[in-house]
Image (tube, rainbow, N blue to C red; front, top):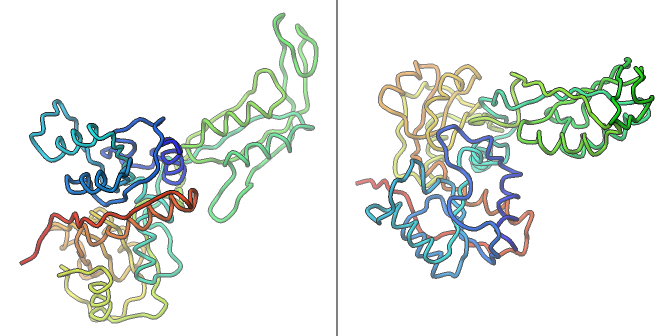
Length: 364
C-alpha cells in the first residue's frame, strides 16, 4: 500500500491536532506516495532500531517518541539523531511518530496502562479544552434530513456516548440574488423569504474541513450560510491521563508490588504510604507531574506516572500516593497500541515489534 494510507489511518485515530504545542508528531521523513510492504514499531528511534528495520527489509518505522523534537540546522552525523536521519534517508526508510496525540485519545497509551492494571470505569483524567466546534446553519425544511444525515456521516453530532446529536428550530430566512445568481428559491433581483430550519450540531476541531465539505455537498443553496463557533466545553473523549477503579480495593503495598511485576520495574519511587485501601487509580504514561493536582481533585488514592522531580513529590501532601515507575516502563506497551491500531484497519499488513530495548536508563 501507499505510505499515505497508513499515515491517514493513524491520524484519523490520533489526529495531529491533539498533540501538545511542543511536540513533533507525524511523518518525520519519507515520501507519502511511496509503496510500502512492512513496518517496524518501536517506542524510540535509535541507531540500533534503524539498523534493525533495514535488516528486516522494513520501509517504515512507527514510533511513539519523535526522532526530531527541536529544529536541526545541519545534518553532519555529529549526534545520534543526525546519524539516524542520514541512515534512514540513504536507505529510503520512512519514520513516523504518534506521540502526545496518541497519549490524548481514549484507546491510546493511557487506556493500555489501565488495561494492564485491570481498571474499570475508566475516563480521561484531564479532558481537553478548545477542541470542540459548534456548527450552525440554515436549511430549507424539505432538505433538513438530507443535510443533517450528511453532517452526521462526516463525524458531527457526537457527545460522549451519544451520536447524531443536533438541535433544530424553525424560522424564516431572507435573501436577494443579484443578476449572476441562480437561486434555489425565489427570483433573482427580488427579495425572497424562505421557511428555514436553524440546525445546530457539534464536532471536534480536526473534522471541520470534512464536515463543512459535507455541508456544502448536501445543501441546496448556491451560497450556504453557516457559523463555526469555538467552544470551551471539555472534550471528554480526549485529554491527558486517565482515571479508573479497581474491581476489588487493594492495600497500597500489594498494589505497588503488582505494578512492579506488570511493568517490569527494577524500582518504584513513591511518596509516603497512607495506610489505606485504594480503589481509584490515576495514570499517565511518561511525564505526568502536571496532573498531580487533578488526580487529587478527582479522588484518586494513587497516581502512576514517571519523571517526578524532587519537589513534585511534595505536592502529594498526604492526600495521594505518587508512584514513579519510570518513563520507559510506563510507556512500553505503546507498541501494542500502535500494532492494534494498524492491524484493525490493515489486518494483512506486515508489522513487527522492535526487539531493541531503547530504555536509556540503567539501575545499579
